[in-house]
Length: 148
Image (tube, rainbow, N blue to C red; front, side, top):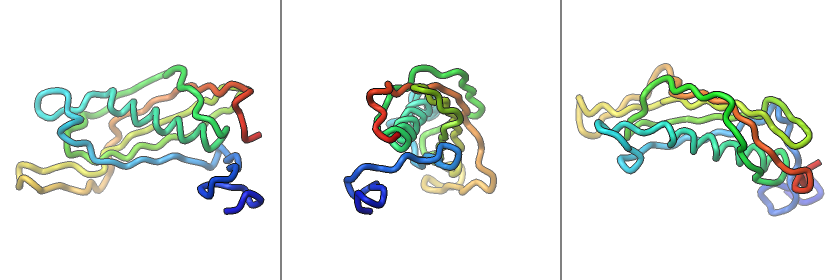
């Protein structure tokens, strides 16, 4: 896109997104390097790190600045995550204040390994398993909000 049409990936100024419609999404495979506990269990902090990346994208899309994830209002770990799992994480802005942005996040397991069948076996889950939900607040100082 050109600068005149709203920018974006072309290097020009971006257009502020509608927080009611914009959703940030990440999908990745967790590896043995992500495992922190016995049995290949991945610690919850890894999922919170994904939520932080989603928050950064949401703030860039809305304000043109990375801002700061100031606090989690709630975090629920709902199911275990293991090395080899594919996780899809989603985030969205739920409320816009003068400098604060409330956000909701959810991570779901969409593929899981099946070492009981073969070392390289895995299943695409018919129903993704919600592994974590969180709500948080981010802040972008008014002077850094470029997309008004």
